[in-house]
Length: 107
Image (cartoon, rainbow, N blue to C red; front, side):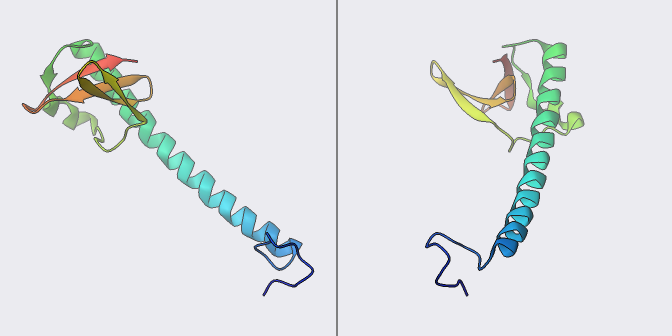
């Protein structure tokens, strides 16, 4: 229960519990950020390697991503280029076409 003498925006009953609550939140937030960062780095690395082999803006078979364990769920943003929407992962972007081919772009 929050005492009456604490200000109206207070979430915790005292300064000690505020410190404990904030440190728990910060630890969970940092852990989540690190996990997301590793996933983005891994996917970005896979796109970089594929671009080195196949080149930029050249269609190739999307099954080539399987050995690199590319995660299709990871994107940092989406960019529209003409009529195409590019999924961006770090410094690289990709488009997956209906015929299971893809192109990689350097952003």
